[in-house]
View 1 (spheres, rainbow, N blue to C red):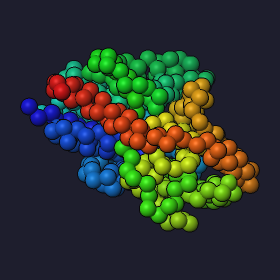
View 2 (cartoon, rainbow, N blue to C red):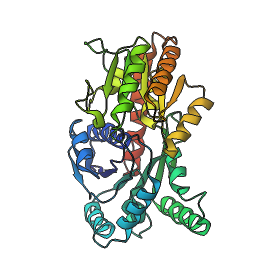
View 3 (cartoon, helix red, strand yellow):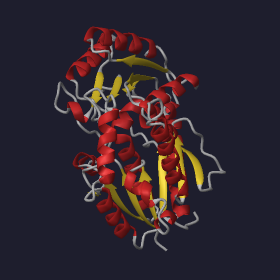
View 4 (cartoon, rainbow, N blue to C red):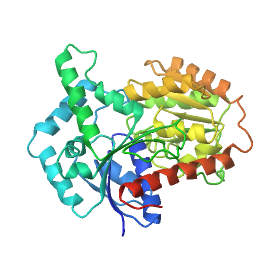
Length: 369
């Protein structure tokens, strides 16, 4: 029996798409048939750079951010509400997903697309929906209205969304610090965030600092101050970010950025699950660029609690201040010399993470490996 999977990865940030391309390649190599869906033209192009052809569910659902990756909560909530109540939006997507699921074993919802959340409570579809999410993201979604004056609505929202999540067939929660467990076989499963297996060191030698900023970053003042701070610390920089493509040597998309990061003296990124996972697996220190994004703020706090080698910097609208923060952070971290075997052992850990996800998803399709 050939496992048949639909993988829906939102394009709000690239961590969901990176996870999707890693797992889709692994699942296909294991013999599964996987159809991939995303939520924007940019997300579709990003996946194409990794050899993944994806269709677009619709362009209507998206979180809203400013040019420094600060979440615009009011605008995001209005966008999601409009998406859910407009008859030509979520209803249309539900009908399309229902058609797409015919003859398929599971629908992987990465991460919390409203249409797939709603399908998770429908009588037939709920047996096929598998939610994939970071633990910090689930709490951020459930607590979206906490602390507001609308306490009754906040309570109702938490209850309804929690019910939608829990009613589905399975929930795979991931985190940068989780270990692979032999007991991860139930409907509720904890897995380490999948990580790309690193290739050899880059031939160009520009590998002292590997910088990645997701597409929500497009403020050029922030980018210039960041690069200047890295240079002040005596480090060369390799910079990737779609919001800065073509700007002072920045690359829009690099499928091999994870390999560069694995060999870097210092990684620089917002505290998403993917970047922190690369830092943990390959034993690299990381500079975390903090913004107003609830789940990433939670990740940064956990990095501190777990003793991960990192420094945090925060853009406050003043370039010189940010440049000084980055210089100090980079100077501190570059004195931390990774173990000589960090990359080779990291490759084994990365492959084990991907293998664990592959086995779990195939098991949900009824395939024992």
